[in-house]
Length: 200
Image (cartoon, rainbow, N blue to C red; front, side, top):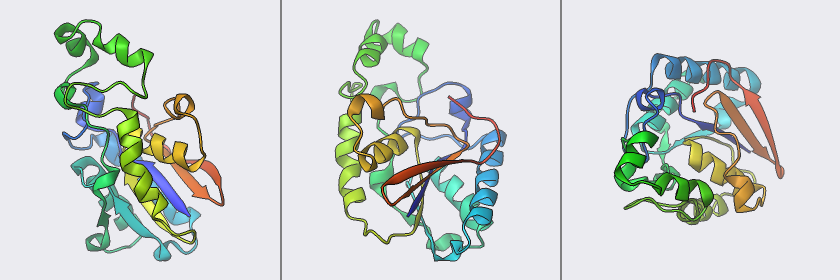
C-alpha cells in the first residue's frame, strides 16, 4: 500500500514559476496543507507506525516529508530519500513563468501544450523521460510494501498512471492538487482530501 502526496504550495507555486529541479520553500499555505495531510494520515491509518516515509530529495518535498513524519510521531532521520522521485526537470525554463517562457521562446509553450507527453524543454525532461525514470522504482516495490511517498505534481501523475496502466494522454490530465493524498492498494487508487487551499 502506498499513500502518495505532492509537496505543499511553495513560494514559486504562488508566483506561478516553474520549479523542476530548482527549489523554493513552502509558503504558509503549503505548510498548512501538509500539516492537514499529516493529521489526515495519522487519523486514517491505524498502524501508521508500520509505514515508511519516502521522499524526493528536493527541498520542498523533504520539508513536506518532515512535517508528515512529525505528525505521525516518526523519527525524521528515518525518512528515505529517493532521487528517482524528483520532479520532471524543466531545464532552461526553471524559475520562469509561462509569460517569460513565451517571451524568450515564442510558440514554445504552445508546442508543449500540444504534446505534453513527449515535449522536452531545452535541457529538461519530457513526461516520457520522467516515466522511464520512475517506472523501475515502482516496479522494484514488493506487493506488501507500506509507504508514504512525498513527491511532486508530475511525478505523482506518472506514478498513478503507471500503477493504473493509463495511456499517456490520460496520465497528463490527472489531478496534482496539493491537498490530496492518493492511496494505491490492490490495483485501486482512492483519493483522500487533506483540507486547505490548492495551488496550480
